Image 1 (cartoon, rainbow, N blue to C red):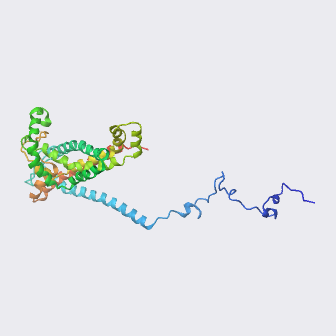
Image 2: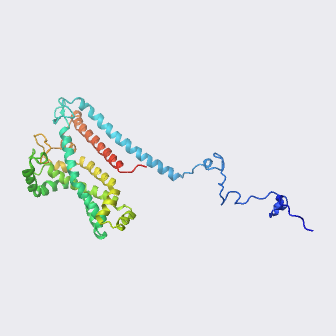
Image 3: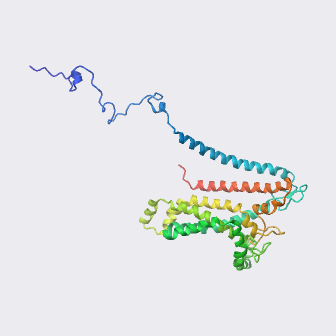
Length: 363
């Protein structure tokens, strides 16, 4: 006679241990694996929890992180030390200056007991020739970068890009000699024509040198623009090449022309890089020395803002006169001018960072 089935007795389940009256083992499904219930975790801080184990950092990672942090800190300290040196060397001369340093156009440092120097004219010449060169170089550099990345076949783009990059290897003095001896005679008819027909505009007025001579800002700006082309072109080209292929193919699939693809995908994607490249070129132009020293001629007349003026930039003024100084006070006057150029370069970089950040969407 068979025993009745006891439905309420746990030992009546199909597990052998349960039939023997032992507790049933927990199955993986019951433990929360492959089930809707979340798996159990160890309490925070316990040896088995992730917080208790911590993160294992390899020795190589620590060394590299320390090296990277130290390199960044070293650059900051180095720049700060340069600025502090310029400031300390310039203070005695600034205290002994008998002219207004910011508004005076005079720069007489022959007598250390009667220093009279100001940076207004140096600032005007430096900013005008640099901005003029940037205005010439930016559209040309943009056109070259777009041609190399969007239009030219690979067999043409690679050697052409290599030739443009080679311009960066040409010494500054070669650019200066080319500008004054080769470019100036060729460009003189254009300068004379601009002065004759647009001389009523202050930018093309006769100036203190005139359009007949090549030693003016008109020639210097063109030479400086040629020197900026490798910087602007190389960086812009690298940025444009990284435009997402899916965006370009999507625009083409929607029926966009090549120029419309550039307008809607390439230029918006590479705008920040193009602006950064241009600002880097502007910083290069502000500090250019030898080429402008060779081209620009000094004048006894005041700078009027015309492209047919001569004069000196911060860098060319220091290069022309600093070797003749034999006392600390006179040298400090030129160091003070260098300090202004130092601050001006920082201001340009800060403006470039602000412009780039405006084009980056905020999360």
